[in-house]
Length: 250
Image (tube, rainbow, N blue to C red; front, side, top):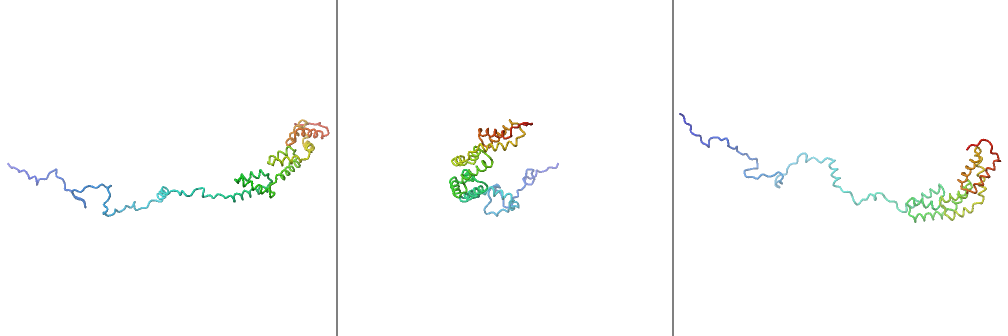
């Protein structure tokens, strides 16, 4: 019978044996593992940058960064960019506009002052400018009152009330207005009669009642008072010669 002696443990391979450890360059047994977040050794060679790190940021990123970091200049106000006109320039412009209005038609003193204030001219300067234009003859409420009498009373045939209404609308001085109304000739009834007789010639196709109503409205619009209007309508109806025959239309 053959007998085998047990093999020596030092020479017999074991299934639990561990493979030998191979260390990386610069490392050795017992060295502590360093976290990648820890700072590098100052004496170590600088790390080379990657291609992405070497590339410059895109233009959009640069612009966004500038927008986020650049603060507006607080010393420059938006209102400072638009220069405000000085007082002399504003006064010169207001005077030019007013003279242009006066070349188109006459203005009362109140109307001229309103033009200047609408142009943002100071109240005191507007008053001084109006006074200067009065001295130069550009503004004259008396002449304007005479002009209204000529155009509305003599040419258009308006009565005293119609002339007064126009003077008030133009904001004439109250004293000047009363003086000029008193100067009107005392021929209002005669003028109303002339207006009614002239008008009735255009109403021949209507009956007497319609003529009466239309003449009343026509003369009242011209500013004649009720008593003057009634006398004028009677005079106009009598001027037809008394014949009212024929077909009449309302």
